[in-house]
Image (cartoon, rainbow, N blue to C red; front, side, top):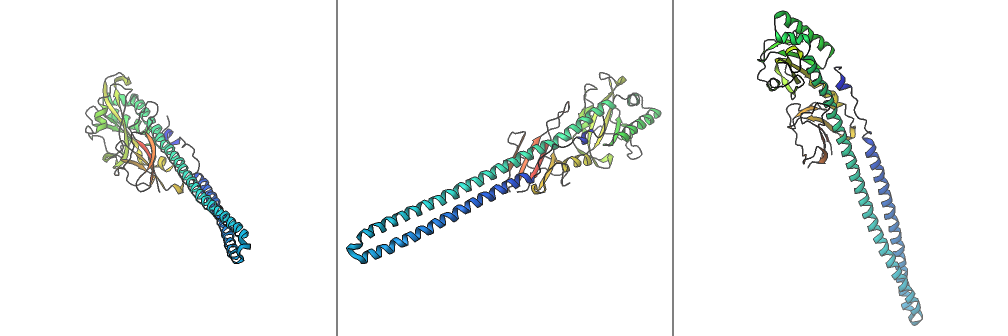
Length: 358
């Protein structure tokens, strides 16, 4: 299993963000042009009817001057005037109906465009959290595999100086090939670090980590096939770096059902790996998007703009849904998708989230 397996997965291809907006703009422009043509033509009709009414009025005046001889002409003039009024009424109704219909069409197109954009953002949110799930699945495989390494098992069983040195060297070799980790720690059952792979960089041997949540949970594992996946945190013993820690129990003889004799903790170098994923999501400049990964408490654990990591909590309206999108009061679009997990890794309740400008 290569150290880079998780990150080499390619994001799901998405249509460029400009496509939907370009099509929508084209339809809106054509609709506006049709509406303007209709308005112009109805105004032309109204001008003609105004002329007809003026002619009818002049004819009535002339017929009144002609007396009885102009009576027949007066009837015709009245009819012409009535026709002109009917045409004018039809023109007004036409203008009103066309304006309303084209307005409804524009509104419908805008809703369709927003829905299309929202669904695309939901898909991209899934893409982001799915990539990290696949990545972290590899971590759960790594820790269970390395916990059965004979050098690690021998050192946990009998942490003599020579065994510790050999185990540290072995862990260092692993780190040389698996560059996504900051360090690997072998701990005894009391939580004391007895060996690590980067002893020259991190002076952790002799430190006690029994208080950490991931170690306490690792001590309760029932089998060598089980693992602990920790939430992202700043680790003081690793220079306060952002890490996701994975643990497995080291067992006698390297057997899954052997007695526990230690704990192997591997520290995934979270920040650069997560940053590569959220910044690799294919949103367009016009989306003005911020791509996030958040934990089960909606704490930001990765952000495409690099802000608020491990300190910001966002407001997310799920309404009982695992995925969806909505607009907040400011007009921002928020799209989200819950972690689907991958293979035996069920995830930690994280979400991929994309926040788009209005």
